[in-house]
Every structure is written in C-alpha cells, then in structure tokens.
Figure 1 (cartoon, rainbow, N blue to C red):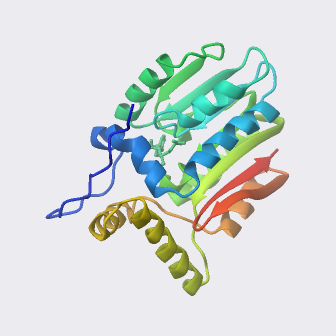
Figure 2: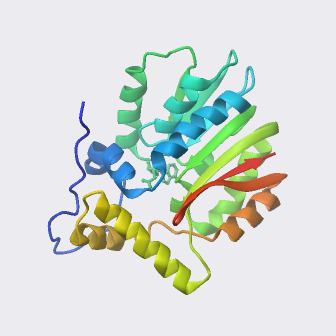
Length: 244
Ligand code: GEK
C-alpha cells in the first residue's frame, strides 16, 4: 500500500501555527519522517539489530515517543530471547490510536506490546535492556531532559542500552549553516518545495530544540552511562548508543 503523501505545508498559510502531532500529521507521518530525516530507515533497521544483540530474557524494552511504532516493530521482529515486553509511549492520542492498529496488524505477536498514552517524563522504567528515544528528546523542555535521562539510566539493567537519535546543532556557525542548507537540499530532492520547507521550519522552530552532540554526551555521562558514542550521523541528524 502506498503511504499518503505529506502535503501539509504545500499551500501558502495565512498564519503558520506551531507544529503538533495531531490527526493530520498522523495520516502522513511515515511519508513525512522518511522524506524529512536523513537516515531514518537505516536507524530504525539498526534498532532492530541492536534489539537482537542487547535484549535479554525477561527484560523490558521502551519505545519512548513511539509515534506509529516503527521502532517497536523493529525491536519486536528481532528480539531473540523469551518473556520480553515492549512498552511504547506517546502523549499524542492520535499517534497512540494509530500505533495500536499498526501493532494489531503485525503478524509477530510473541512479544507483547503495552501502550501508554502519556508523557515519557512520567513513565516508570524498570528491568530495561533497551530504551529508544528515536527523535523524541528534541521535543522535551531542555530543563526536563536531565531528569528523564537519569530515570532511564536508573531503570536499565547493568549493560542495558539507550539509543538516542536527535536532530543536532553545531557550535560553529558556518558549519550549522552548511548542515541546514544540505538538509534543505535533502528535503528538496525528496519533493518538498521551498514553500513547504520554509513553512515547516517556521512551524517547528520553537517546538524542536536541538542541542550539540557535546551537550548530549555530557548529559548521558552525568546520567550514569559508562559508554557513550555516536554510531550514525548524516548531516544534522545523529544517533547515539549509550551503555549503562
Ligand atoms: C519513530 N520514535 O518513528 N511524551 C511522550 N511523547 C512525546 C512527548 C512527550 N513529552 N513529546 C513528543 N512526543 C518515532 C518518531 S516523532 C519524531 C518520533 C518526529 C512524541 C510526539 O507525539 C511524536 O509522536 C514523537 O514524540 C516524535 O521512530 O516527528 O520528528
């Protein structure tokens, strides 16, 4: 089945409202994220590979900010050990409702998936072997990020892993500008017009708050992760593996 195409910002808007994960976004989400985030399919696929490698018997996996459950599916299809459970969390009712349908239609049902409609800041993390923040932390208030990462690290078993994927910012201004330009070229090559790129940028400006890789590394270390490194980067999008 072809995915509905994202045309949300294709026509001039009198006023560009702040971006929110509502029903309109849910309807085009798979197309939107693939055409907007360089490397997204590779990252999701690798989350499956990491699930195969790190998820231990009887442990919990967390998909924090699960949207339509792409990372949940990737983990579910690759977990090798018995008696595991995936907890998928999102605070958008429209996202969670669609994610439930996506998972219900999935043929693999050996690994149960528990959905939580709520803020990832409020979720209890325990017995975790793998936690995933795939492009979600960037939407959390910067002041709330340290406590969230502390909670995640505390709730992971020794040797447990956090995958943190984010849009990142650069301290060097010319480099920041170059990455932004190349990212816009990526979006243009994927069929977005200059108008769509500009209106989406205005909508997301105060909603998605990127930080530098150095800031992420430092915070992850402070939260208690003993090994922290980037395993994937394309332009201003990166994914970090942090091991407790
Ligand atoms: C994927 N991980 O496809 N609590 C819970 N959910 C939240 C919160 C919060 N405080 N803030 C935002 N969200 C997915 C993609 S999208 C990334 C993640 C993007 C949710 C929000 O509702 C949305 O579904 C998700 O985080 C971010 O692998 O669109 O760039």
